[in-house]
Image 1 (cartoon, one colour):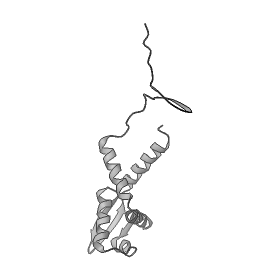
Image 2 (tube, rainbow, N blue to C red):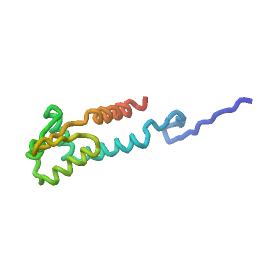
Image 3 (cartoon, rainbow, N blue to C red):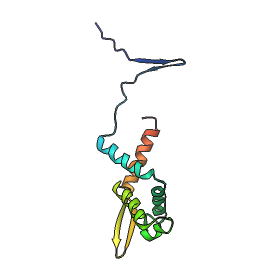
Image 4 (spheres, helix red, strand yellow):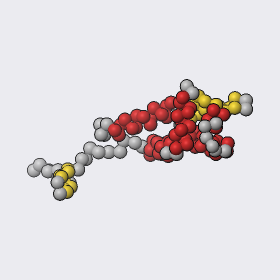
Length: 123
């Protein structure tokens, strides 16, 4: 005797939906933690503007060029840059008394890939 597989059916007033057993988790815990940290860092308007400033500098900008755009103290600017660095969005390099910040293109490419994946309706 053949076994009949029954899919759960969800119905609403105007719609019938058959559950899809092919839906599965595509991201591991490490990936989701990294992506969540990056999106959390980008959720702050100042940090998003900092990323934009760094991108305009050919991907690398001195901290002094970032500071002059904000009415924030230097420790607050440093805190925001640290959050971006800890999230893997930027890398920083000290050169004498100045610190230069550059985008981490591999992380930005990974975020772009994730957004393209989920925007492609799961394909």
